[in-house]
Length: 123
Image (cartoon, rainbow, N blue to C red; front, side, top):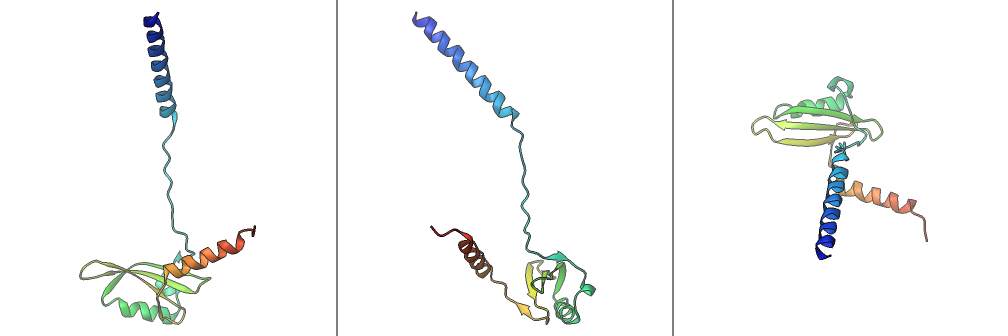
């Protein structure tokens, strides 16, 4: 009787493991790509106003321009630069007057949190 119960438990265990492996094999791997959508779109240098163009051209003595993007809503240009001598990268923001702007990510995050808090219902 003990051998019969033991063999039944062994067969049931094997059946369970086989079904779990089949269930795991049927799951398809998924890859999700998250892109940063900050409202900036790629532009050419000649598409920007003269003040921003002059500011960027001043930096080209030390840096090569990797990407050039513009946000129409915020009136900001985002330039990713590569230093010519050591190949380090630097991200610079210019306002519509061609002045460098320090973009504080923590300040933007705080504004987003405040917006979320105002949208939450008050209990």
